[in-house]
Length: 480
Image 1 (spheres, helix red, strand yellow):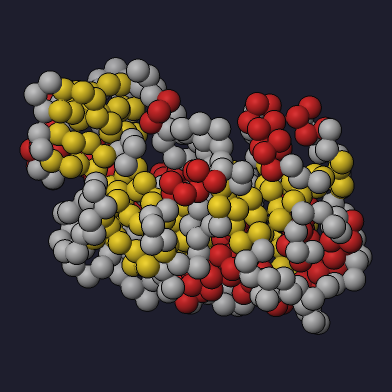
Image 2: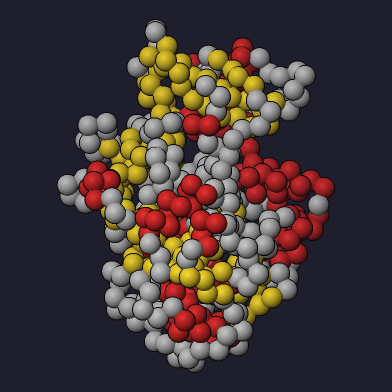
């Protein structure tokens, strides 16, 4: 048995637990409102949650978890086809939503329960088997229909406790973020994380640098964001002394969901004296590694394995890489209590995701430095380029390109080449569309920083790079 939220059981106090804009709930109020949700969904196995960035979403998910059911967060921006697939696959008994939310046709056939954030139920003892499902979170579906990753309660507890160890995260911390709540980053880390610690979360509703400055200058101690958010922060810092003061005074700045470009790391540090730390995780594993609060925040690195997580790099044939030299590229495999249980209704996909001895194949490629720090170089399917006999990760080339003054955004892919196997292609959003950097200029720039075999052979110019809701570049959506 495991209690996910000790601060909500027994005698919850009057400390603020959740704040969304000018609406807030204390732990006592949250316990009562979540219990009221639990009473209305009693007996349900899975419950869909219309996951807007609102107080009702947090209350709804907590209520589902306290009742021992599993929450299925729904992205309000999903199309009808995707929503239809998720609902038919997960078969939730009902959907939770904020009063007044208009649900699309795909969701309207479900029984609906409106979340009352001032509800008054009787708090229950949060004691449910650790292996019981807590969440069913659907993957992005880049290689087919989204798959529902069944995340057990033990995985949430293990990840949040490991992060508490790594980040020295306590009930005194106040977290600010503006992340969506249908994904692991915003929901598990950004809402359930503070609640497990007995701390507070202030959600911005919509990310903005003014909101970040306001909250960090008025008691917030931690900021969670994705690279696009930190890029906006880096761009704003030179002209915003209040934002400089806010970041300089924060206890912890954390970036995740995609690699933070080195250039943005350096600009933030130069302006504030603070370094952003990175961590690495995914839907199926929650969190795997992180730079520790008491460790070195090394730009481009996602730190070391979290407590309880085993991590290894393997060759294409599955042979483990045993030498940490900062150059040998291998696929990350992980094992530990942070892993999901299965892909819902997909036993073949579940079996294919694991090795015979229980290691999960992440599909992410990385190198490991001699001191154990992990550096992600990209996804195996889209970011590993085999050119001239070398295995090359797109990520380090992208970082190098972003350091060039005429480059605003950059993505790197490979395309077939009769001589090299694959040639490196740079997709560039230039600062000045009328005078973009040439392929020779970019090749010389990369060669001076990395190695000649990592230089781009082709450059293609775009007005904008395709990105998903978490700011990740969607390379499969690049023009063919």
